[in-house]
Length: 125
Image 1 (spheres, rainbow, N blue to C red):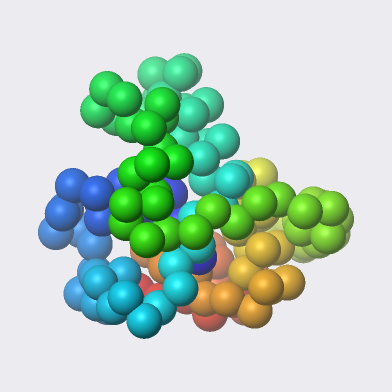
Image 2 (image 1 turned 135 degrees about the horizontal axis):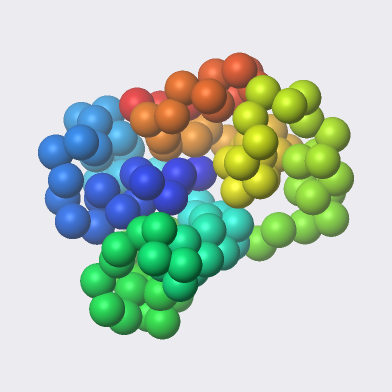
């Protein structure tokens, strides 16, 4: 599962993306998921001015994810219920959804955010 920030760094080849994350994302044998929650987060933050993204990223997110070979992970009822039941280590609803999805789908998350460690999910960085 690809965290929003890691995705943005991947897109612009930012040196803040770790070597481990870069290797994981470049390896075409890995199945990389991008959550619908991350798309929602990027769209909201872009619209509110909290996040500057290049023109057209939000409108072309689907084709861009497809061209990278990333799969969109929809939000299911099970994901929503798990996110709601998580301990309150973190109040960010988007990150809580990523935790729920990685737990239910038995995935690792590619993220530099150590808050995910509190939920005992596998974090690659």
